[in-house]
Every structure is written in structure tokens, then in C-alpha cells.
Image (cartoon, rainbow, N blue to C red; front, side):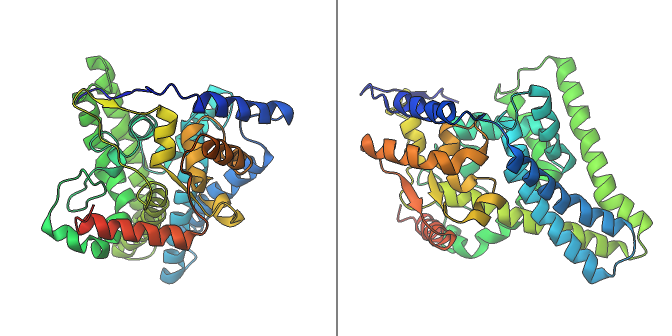
Length: 361
């Protein structure tokens, strides 16, 4: 693929100015850019939402309905771990200590994912090439869905506003069962993972080992030790991933595939005529910043603009940084995209999905 370059021809100093002001905030208030006691408490809550229901299921003391309810709660916990714990850790934002970041990030592996693939897709491709078709893999056309104006048009996409939520629901299920393996080979083929042969073998074996461990504790052990038909265990597993997939997909889409967000295309030389930081402002949206519960649960991803500009700062600080970012953006004549409620952001996303499906954009 062609290499993308961000060309700041106007020599704007937006990011330099913003970074100086953000740094001043932390210096003046004598606080770290990493996790605080609130973040530690959130970590305990999210891990508990996943592991306590699992332990209850293992006790073999609940009926089928209670088991499915526990599975749904685990889905909420898995989404919370993804958004509010491992996300910061994989950005090295949770702690100044690299070993602790790796330990916290390991929650993704325990939950059925793969840290290396995730960091490549999210940290490198999504954060660098936000909303750029074929580079930002998070907004690529997927099967029969169109998420970018540059995406291929198909007649069936006219109905994507109806079926898109099915694909949202299976997002983590696909990631857990197949996507990590598919990405392993894709990233090697595309030169994103430049490993020696021995490293490739070790990485693949490690990936398969942890997948085996995951499916052992999430499916095989419950089928073995629970006094219920195996089909019910599979339904619980699907319930877990349906809940997690819907939450994670929708939260992500409310930040990028909404009205007002741009989808820039590089020129023939691979250039984006913009400063990287301004590109982040123009392709990203905040939502529901004043809703403390949303902010707590989604790991500050409702402050997506702040996250894209400062991914190595723990999300616990984003509410304080947002006014600084917004005022600086306006000072430089930049549009700061913000939907003040989840409902408005969701409506905006539905509008975009409809327009993209009907090929009006």
C-alpha cells in the first residue's frame, strides 16, 4: 500500500500550542498523566463485572436464566475492560511503568483477544490514518457494509441500517474466533510485523495457545463441570459476545462515523494536505461529555478527540482536558464535533449509515 504523509503546508502551530497548554495543566496541578485512585477503582469494577459472574457460573448453583444473566453481565464487563482498562494500558497511558502496562493490557488476551494484533490495528493504523479508507481498518467496508464515502457501493447496502447491528453484535465473536488469526497473516504480508521465521512461529503458537486457554475456561470447562446441556453453555457464550460486540461497536462508531466527521482521501502521491493533529480533530467526535456514567463506563471514549490527540494520557484526565482542546481548536478556526447526548450521537450515526447505504455520500 502507498505510504501516507501528512503535509502541514500552512505551517499551523495548532498542536504545538495545544500540547503546551495541556502540559501546563498537569504541571500547574502537580498531577501525573497516568492513572489515579479513581482509575484503579474502575479497574477493579470492570474486572469484577467479568470474573465474578464467571465464578458464579462455575459454582453450578444457578439456574439457566441466572447463568445467561451472568453471561450478559460478563459481556458488559468485557466491554468495560476493553474500553476502560486494556485500552489505556495498550497505549502505555495507564502507568509510567512499562511492565505494569503490559500486565494490565494482558486482560485483552485473557478475554480472548491478542494484544499485538490489537496494537497494530488500533494504535498504528486507526490512530495514524483515522477515517482514511483502506488504511484505517476500523472503517473499512466489511462484507456488505459501507462505512466510508470512498467504500465500494453495492445495492444491498441500502438496507444496511437494518442489518448493520447484526454485524455489530458479532464483532467480538469474530475477533475471538477468527480475526486474530486472519490478521496475523495479513499484517505479516503487509510488512506491519517484520519478524524472523522463528519469531513468526513463536508468535503464532502463542496466539493459538492463548486462544485454547480462553475457549477452555469459557466453553469446555463449563460444559464439563456444569450440570446443564452443552447447548445452554454455547447460548451463554453467544450472549456474552452479543452484549460486548454491540457496546464496543456502537461506542466506536459514535466517535467516527457521524455527521460532520470527515473522511479524507490522499492524493496520488499519498499526501494528506493537513497537519496530523488537525486531521484528528476533523475525523473524530466527542459525545455526552457531561454524563458521568457514560464517561465512567466507556473509558473516556466519549472524549475521543482528546484521546486521539493525547493517546498516552490516561482517559481519567480527559474531562479536564476537553475545554482546553475545544477552546484551542476554536481559536485556530477548527470545527470541534460534539453531540451532547448519547441519543444525539446515535441518531447522527444512524443518519450517516443511512446516507452511506443509500450512496448519497
